[in-house]
Image (cartoon, rainbow, N blue to C red):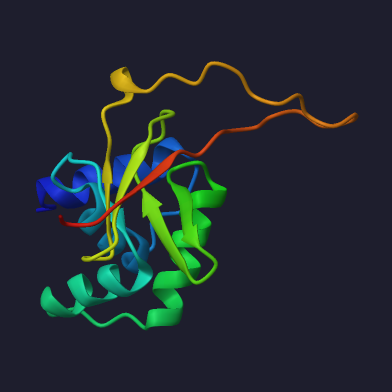
Length: 138
């Protein structure tokens, strides 16, 4: 019998037309199996796989996260040139980046106001605006 987390993971994958391989279902279960949104790095997801007693290579984790993003299941948020986070929450919302911890979390979107954006250059349109508020402990 399939666990509730595996069922949720399989449904999540099939909603985007992603073939539910064993490794994809495993990773999806860790991402959305409990119904909560996640911000993960490839390394943190790889660690969660190991903690669960499973075996998946780090390269497979990277490739699967990219496939999930390409399918529209997640979005990649680049905090700086060297660190990317993957977010299962797809609506437009700002983030807090906790510099001391290297952690990304959702910020309250109801408190954010963007009065005006610069116009996009000719032949382009604004696809998305990422707001990352960097924090450090006082």
